[in-house]
Amino acid sequence: MIGSSPTRDRWAAELAARARAYWTEARTAELARGKALLLPPAEAAPLLRALGLLHDDGSLPPSRVPKYFQINHMLALVAPALRELRARHPVLHLLDAGCGRSYLTLLIAWCAKHVWAHPIEVLGIDRNPAVIEASRRRCALAELDDVVRFEAGALATLDVLAAWTRGFGGAESPTVHGVFALHACDTATCDALALGIALGAELIAVAPCCQAELARVWSALAARGDAGAFSPIWGAPHLRRETAAHITDAMRTLLVRAAGYEVKAIEFVPAEHTRKNTLIRAVKRTAGDADARAAYEALRTATGGAGIALAARLAGSARPASS
Image (cartoon, rainbow, N blue to C red):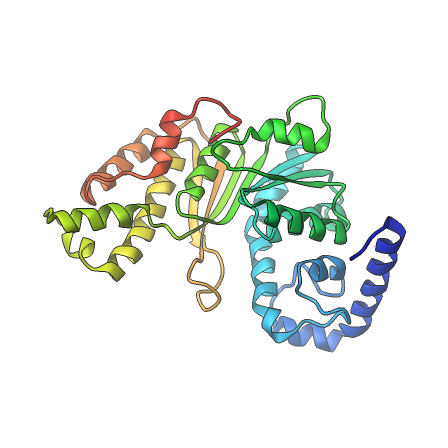
């Protein structure tokens, strides 16, 4: 484990030197295969090593190549919106809701510090204290603990702005400019979306995972023998799961659009890497869209009458610090 700051600095410098020596122009070109690398291994070695992607000699094992390209693609998808935020705000305040291993948290913080040279504060939240401790270790290893903090807690109950003040020691609660959630399971993605909307975040980006809420309701409808245009799907477990995931995300896009965001649902990473490859990216543009809310209600009715957690979260949101 890297201890004192001088030891950590020496480790980072030595690793960076090994990575620059390893990643010759030919090796880098072979890895890229014509793709743009926003994080070349020779330039972001301490971060990539902290994330478990690089070996200590600076090499990238074949088993980690897909994840390496995922995080490059991840950054490319949110980079234009982050560029807009940097142009408007002297210090970026970003929240990673359900941060897990903190790939995106540390990725953006690294770029802000070493590539964009733009002040940033990032708070990562996860309900698992062990995950938070591991993220703190990776953050320290990457020398990003001056701009990133982590907090253990559930999105639905944690006072996010108070946690931010505790973590960064500010006198006032910040304005949160962007909210991210990668592969937050089932209704946790709805929690993250509702939190972003309640905080008035200008950018919200979520990659949903395990959208089981509608499938559970549809299964109950099938067991009851309810009839409807969707009953052939309700009674087929595979079709029920797959269709429910897509309908859930369609409902989410409509509800977020109704809250005043320009929303796109796009391919997050190539399907060969993961089936959970939808990214919902929302940018605050308007006061709201009544037609989008009407479209949500029509879709809910057409598919059996079951709504999703996000609708309830938005209806019951009482304070910007919780979802």
